[in-house]
Length: 123
Image (spheres, rainbow, N blue to C red):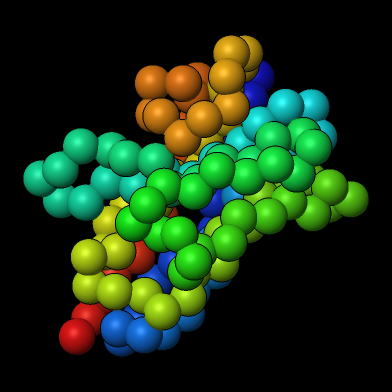
């Protein structure tokens, strides 16, 4: 059974920094693919970034140049570093992984989901 345990998040002012972590159980980041997604209130869930077993990354346009996805393979932990945060980044952030298929930042490509962590950016 796969479980994705998230930590981090919180509230910061615009321009600030936050770091999210995700520790998978029953799933190794070295095997395949992991990613971050977010869902703002009243909006659909959207992709943020994914990273594959070779370290290849894909970022969606709203976060390019500001967010960094990475994996500590020794500890089997996925990270998302978020710089220059904006109020529009406010959302529930989810760690996710696919059972198979392509490694891309589409929510429908993912099979396993963390419970989410709230990120709130104030002006």
